[in-house]
Image (cartoon, rainbow, N blue to C red):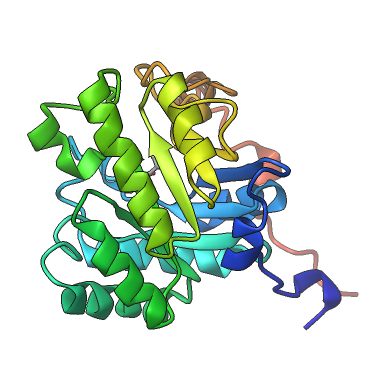
Length: 275
Ligand code: KIV
C-alpha cells in the first residue's frame, strides 16, 4: 500500500483528550464520495441515523434499521482513512437489554469496521454504555433533543429550555460520561445549558444546535451543503447544492431536447486502422 493510501485513524481516546482543547470537527456522511471529502477535514465522521430522513426520505429516524446503518457504514469506511468513524445504533436495536445492545453494536463494528457506536442516551442508558465499553465498544452518547424519541417529545423541538428538563438533560450527560462514553453529542438545547453540560462533564461535548463553547461541533452534511429548502434553525448552509443540482439537470434536459448532447467529445468513433 502506498504511503498516500495508508489508513491511520483518529482514536476514541484521542477524541476524549481534546476536552477543553482544539475544537473537534465532526460531520455526518452516508456514502463513499462524501466520506472521502469529509475525511480530509474532520476528526470524526458520524454515520448518523439521520440518513433515514436525508437519504431515504423517511419522516423520522424511527424507521431506520440495523441493515441500513451497516450498508452505509461500510461505504463510509471504504472511503475514509483518517477520521474516527462512529455508526449510530438505530431505534429498537439497543434499548431493551444490555445483551441486545452488545449483540447489535458488535455486529455493526464487525460488519462495517467502524471504531465506535452512538446511542441516544436517556436515563436508561448508563448501564448499556458501561456494558459496551467494558466489552471493547467505544460509545458516543447523545443527549438533549433525541430524534428517536420524537413521538414522546411531540416533534423535533429544542429541549432543555425549562429548568426541569434542563436538569434531566444535565443528569443524562453526567451519567453518560461517568459510564465511560468517550464523547457526548448535545443537540437542540439552550446555549446556557450546553455550556453547563460542557463544564460539568469530563468528556468532549459535541454541539448541534447547542453552543459555540462546546468542545466540538457536528452538522448533518446534506443540511449544511444546502440540499434542502427547509432545515432546522441551528443549521448554517455552507453551500447551495439544491440549486446547483437543479441547474445542472435543467441544462442537461435542454441539451437532450436540442440534440446538442452528446457532443463530439462525448462520443466514440471508429479507430483509424494501424498502418
Ligand atoms: O443522526 C445524526 O445525524 C445525528 C446527528 C444529528 C448528531 O445524530
